[in-house]
Length: 456
Image 1 (cartoon, rainbow, N blue to C red):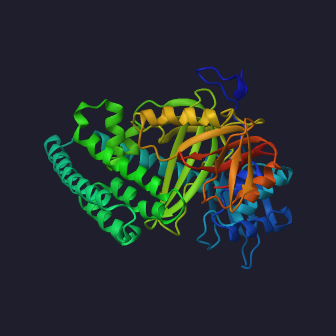
Image 2 (image 1 turned 90 degrees about the vertical axis):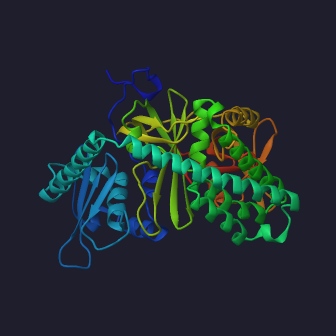
């Protein structure tokens, strides 16, 4: 007998009901222009035909050409396809179709899909099967263990040499002081970062390229920069003692330096099954690469999970995990002392939540949880936190979070959506999800009008 998510037991029991909201569809838009154009097409009168079945939507939209555009959406991911020439993903027609369905589901006739929808779904199934077979064949290929060991040893030597050079650079840096003019330039840090790339330590290069931004603004910029430099020093020392550390801590250090497990290999292992709520998402562009950070929260286990997606500028990102979506899913975590990053192994959308998830009761609880996380991973860059009963309001040129006990923390300067957040919450205490870095809180989503509203 199906049960609600609030009644989950360890083995799991969820109702298969896909419920989409306008706020979730809005987060799928590649840009504001596409969203505006999609809203203009959301009225059923713009569509020659509309249809749906258990897992898909489709419609034909009359454009400027002779033939209507054939638009279709696979609701299980979601995935999109349209016969229009747009390079946006999803295009305005797909957004319009989705918004029309959310606003007026009765306009969609429940019927058998037309041939062009059947063909698309069959093609997707074939490609998925081909990919799975290729992965299985790759897993069965014999591995040259001797060559693999040589490559691993060579990389270890390269990384060790790079870390020794970095240690000398950091020593000179601290001896001369962080305020010296050359430290304020991107060129200075890019030079060191390039050397780390040559040493096969791309993770360290990323950390180094972030330092000039830290030194550029804020009254506490030197304290924050010194904190990051100390973390780099600790990373160097940890790598030199790698064999003496617990396995989880070894994995954290190797991942930060640049060793990463392959997602395909992780999927061969067991994961954590739960009812996962997508609580927030943030998109950044760095080094000609767009990174999407999506946070999920297990309603039974209480575990957070971070799913990363990458794309070059102008290319579509994975849109299958919009904030507010609830999934019956199995997630496999990357190894580490504080597992956060994960990949989705299996998934099925379920009913949308009707109440906000639980959150830390106040900012004191945030400090305690963050301290416990740092004890497990001292290089933690962003701690996912859900807060209950906090208020966000303007102070001076920025924003602050305030709890019922009177404590307050600054909102991260990169938050440009403070007024939107205040408008949705009405200035009342409520649930807020975001990232805490020990200095400021970056709000990514709030609970308003019965659903998760994402801002990041």
